[in-house]
Every structure is written in C-alpha cells, then in structure tokens.
Image (cartoon, rainbow, N blue to C red; front, side, top):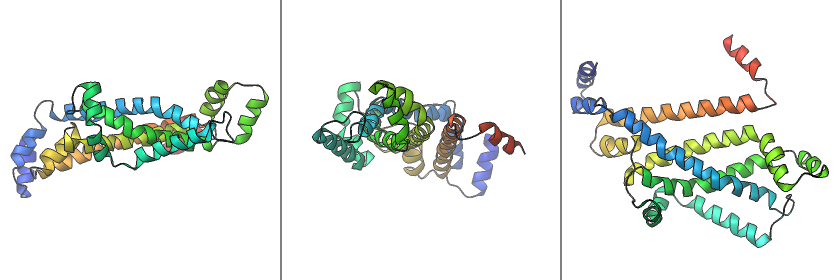
Length: 251
C-alpha cells in the first residue's frame, strides 16, 4: 500500500512523495499525533468546565433579576474579566501565559504545557455558553421552584441544569471543537499533535501530502465529536421524539 501511494503521488508530480508517505506510515506517527491532539484539548475542556460552568451560573443567577443577586460592581468586574480574556487571540494569550505554565507544569514546551493556556482561554467561552443556555429557560419554571421553597442549590442543580441539559451539551460540543482548534494552533509554538505536524512539517517543509492528511484527520475528529454531541443532545431533549427520528432515518 505504501509503495502504491508513493507511485500515485509521484505520478501527480508531488515533490518528496516517498519521504512524506514513509513518515506518515512510520510506526506510531499518526496514532500518537491523534492521541496528542485529543489529550490536551479534552483535559483542557474538562478543566474549563470546572471553572466556566459555575461562572456561567453566577452570570445568570447573580443579576438583579436572578435568584441570588450579587453586588453590581462584582457582576460588572466578572463580565469585564470574561470579555477581556475572550478578546485576546489564543496564540498571544498562550505566549503571555508561558510563565504560568512553567510555574504549574514546569515547562512551556510540549503538548502538556498547552493545557494551562487552553483552559484559561476556554473557561470564559464556556461561561458565556452556559450563560446563553440558562437564559433560554422559561422563567416560570424557576418561579414555580421558588414558590415550592426550593433552595438556591436545588434550583440550580435540580431545575436549571436538567431543563437546559440538551442546550448545555450542544454548548459543550462547540466548546470542545473550539478548544481542539486552539490545540491545533498551539503547534506553531511548541504544542504537539496533528497541528504541529501540519504546521511544522507540512507547511514548514512544503510537504503537501503531510499537510493535507493532517488537516483531513482533524476534520474527521471534529465531525466525530460533533456527531456524538448532537446525538446525545437529541436523545436527552424532552421535546424531541428520538425514537421517531431513528425510525425516519431507517427509511
């Protein structure tokens, strides 16, 4: 198969086709690159939700009309910090956070080192996604829960979260894909994975086959994540008859 691909690309006039194909098919190259591509972004997505989910809840419940209003100056400061972090381009933010990565992880180079900047870049984005999902909820449901004497935590965990779960899952899917794209960009300044291969070897050495194979694999990963997230959101959405959707697809 390797020789057939080499012959095919050489026939198309692709320079250094043999070197590129041998690199791609060398033991562990693609599997390890896919692992690195998923490892840091998925961990960063987890940490971003640990930070961003409570922030998103506070952005909704802490307003004047929320179930637990907070001081106006505190809400304004929180919104300002979130907006500032969201406005900084990821590559610039990553460079700015090198000292923090070195402090926490002891290094600023490699896939693991990107977890810190990925988390800090994604947490404000997650907070806004959570805020947007919770704001879609019918206010009457919350008022009914308050009338029944539910506490703040009960309203958040047993009313708001379950009611908004499909929207929250869609938001988590979008956040994961965004973090994955950030992780691919980190290959420009020391990160690993398919992003590093496509930028450093594909683009940097003008290896077209490596570049396009890396990009295609990234697209496939995004499609897999999107499909899983969409299917899960549909399955948990009470407004959608999931069995009916599957029946129609079989037709």
